[in-house]
Image 1 (spheres, rainbow, N blue to C red):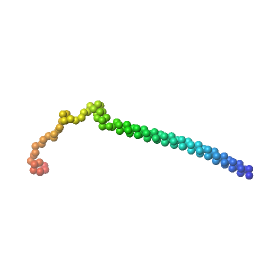
Image 2 (cartoon, rainbow, N blue to C red):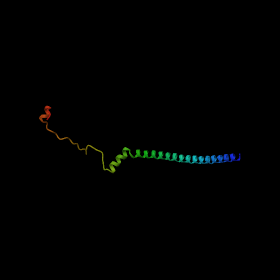
Image 3 (cartoon, rainbow, N blue to C red):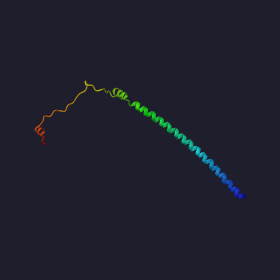
Image 4 (cartoon, rainbow, N blue to C red):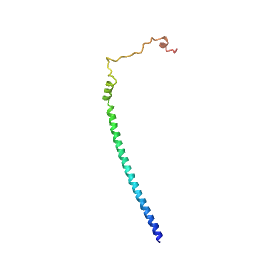
Length: 101
């Protein structure tokens, strides 16, 4: 009888130690999960901020200003526009009759 009580006592102690270990692991994993969720929220906020900055950087007025300042571009006006016409080709008899060479 005494031997059975000792075995049962050791089994209860082993299960209690295992329970404490499992609770510790559970709390540690929950803490890591909470940190990962916080990091994910931070990354989402950063992504949203960067998307807003990207949209702000690509406004037509800003692009036009950069084109003028950095590239030296200017808007096309009739005064500076040069029109190029294709050279005139004299019609030949083959083109007027529809025959192929």
